Length: 70
Image (cartoon, rainbow, N blue to C red):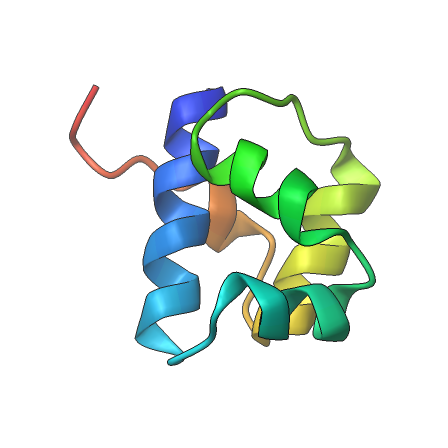
């Protein structure tokens, strides 16, 4: 699940043309934390997923939606 969230986060961020630093400003989460999420090294809380989704202007479901790579 961590890797799935990481892949979806990275994809959605890139699709919106955002850097990790820009997402940091929008979400209030550190760039280091966002980077570790994208690498599948951290377990985000439900609240964190919601905050990231708000910053990306997507549904939180998009962050956990299967992508067929597992």
